Image (cartoon, rainbow, N blue to C red; front, side, top):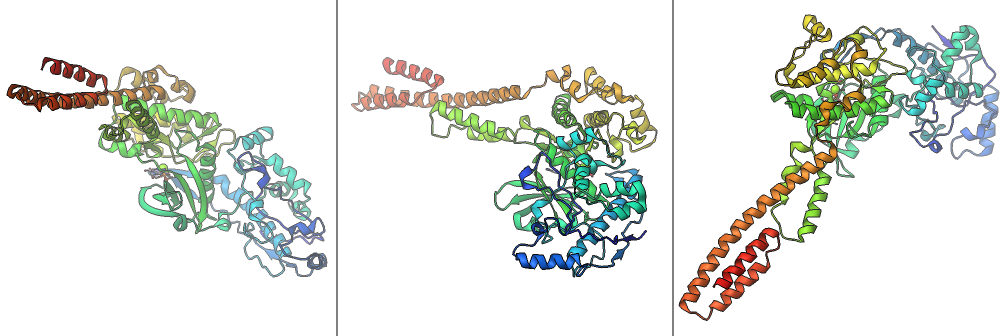
Length: 595
Ligand SMILES: Nc1ncnc2c1ncn2[C@@H]1O[C@H](COP(=O)(O)OP(=O)(O)OP(=O)(O)O)[C@@H](O)[C@H]1O
Ligand SMILES: [Mg+2]
């Protein structure tokens, strides 16, 4: 289908395929609502910096007279309907995105309109391929445009007010504001609408609304980061451990394996960024710092989880019930948070649960400082090594949910199936009525695997058995824990417990809460401190014994130096400060008085 520029007397001075809508996350002041304008409508504002009013007026006249425009531009948008069979995760479940090609095609139509209109504005620019205008377009300051994050509370709210008409409408959640913007700016293309009727109107109201990654490429990776290691490879990305050259901190940077800009994976990549930006603030969700496009790849800068993935942990040995409870407690806390935002993860599995070993390290540092203050002992009391040891202790592990590439909203689900080994049956059957419970199933089967139930089947009768309520009892787990896992894997999603009810399940009440963990930590520190003091006490006793012998010897020889020996013994006892030491000191006094 060819797209023709309408023979219209109006000249549109600027048009970008991306749309900035007010969202809570970025500061609203930063983004000015961008309007489509006629040539004579407040034209000056779109002039490049430095153009004099006279130059601007001349250009306006030229445009009004049709000079310098692209004239009779006709073009065909790249609207091949490619039905891509996409595979997700490893091993993958086939998932066809049937609706996608249609919507993408529509978006390309609007992008074509954008490109044509833009070509009018720039006389010598020939747009061979219709696409969204680059951010660095000299007429559009970069800060004027921004994506709409569909996962922000504002977007979800907007969606609740007015349901989008397309099935593939995640980007259109703010359609209310979007329509208002488009209609009020008279940007609607009448000719195209006439040609296409109502559907045409709909297409143009749903113009591509995200910045084309290709146009936002910037070079940051090598300039800002020093690559240390490759820490993981997934279906979608390679993850590097990097040090930020400026702040000196370690980060995990996930780079898409292939260039995503312009491909069907662009949406997936952006989805992950949007989800991270909204969710990456919780202790049990991998923290997010920034994201950018570079060489058409998507890069996401995240918190580096130094404990590796749960998958790596269960390679050597399966987890015991205590450890499993900690995994459950942390992951369910993360899921509860995700679900409370009306979002679902859709790819919970051991490879996507990461752990950090040092999140409570600052508590240890505080504790260390407190102890030093109490003892007022500047000398090394031997505890430094204990604190260091504890910093690396398993007590401090925190599990975090990562890989948010499949996150979707329950209000407007766009489900891309995760790993089939952890996938619930209803999702395979495209029943999306209770997506929260799909996450619960995946977590249940993850626990089952971590406790020794693996390797999990990818298909076949065993795959079905696990989903039909035939979950084998794991001998290493208590009856209660086995029951909880079976409940989480219940064939009927409605019968599975919610993240909220699991969080307050009695099985987890015996697990140390964070404050209890802190208490446990302090207890361990105290115990080790006592051990060290006992050792010192033993040492002191030995020294006293030696001194006693010396004093006795001196006394026996009636040597005048014996008084010095007593003095030396007294000054030694004064140095003893702890209760144990004072005991020793008392004993010394006895020794001296006995002498
Ligand atoms: N923030 C992080 N800290 C530490 N390791 C990480 C981090 N992010 C990812 N990894 C490691 O990299 C691996 C791949 O990362 P991730 O799951 O995000 O990639 P993916 O390509 O989206 O995976 P999938 O195959 O599940 O789609 C993880 O299993 C983990 O071992
Ligand atoms: Mg992954």
